[in-house]
Image: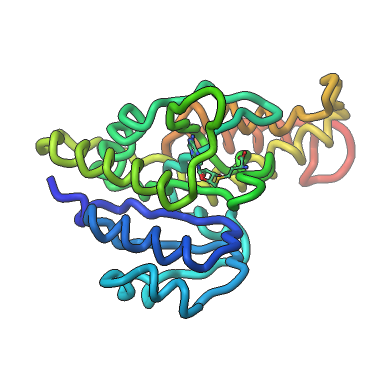
Length: 248
Ligand code: SAH
């Protein structure tokens, strides 16, 4: 299967050095990926990006620029974060090979898949990780685990190209994953219902919603399941008489 036929995008968040954006475009084109999305890049377009892209400057011309990560992944069924470090609420990290194989299978089933890379100095924030359902860490020396951004992308896209080569035509699942937009609508609905019932965040760290998001993102909820969850929330609202006003 060819990687270029799959809906897999690379998303770079708040990149500071335009040269890195060019180097990422080149790494992608080498492996047959074309969809580059940029979230609030510090400098783009930029001559240094074009120079480092070399023969991949067409990818820069087609790059989609977004204001927020949420917008960049709203139509994605699977959003994969990459990070050398664990953050506040730990994920169980996948190795690049496993992550690439899952990504290729989900993309083959028609789900848009995003791989998200953080800014050079700070990496991905907790809020950005909250948009993601999986975390991939490239194993490194314990002494120094942070790769150059474009080098990290190169390793991931190489693994994606190997995974695509290995993948023969698989039976395609009929139900696709819920998109990140649908999941965000579900989280907002859940938050409303929880507030309405007087449920309070009693976690020691005050990150209850982040943990709930992590739970559901990890579950890779499909389109039918998200409808069921929304239906349950609506039933709770009806019972409480939210639409009619006043307590049931
Ligand atoms: N100082 C930052 C490093 C950012 S490097 C931090 O500690 O998080 C820029 C980006 O490259 C990271 O956000 C991540 O997307 C990617 N990256 C670098 N090293 C990586 C590794 N070992 N595994 C996975 N991604 C990595």
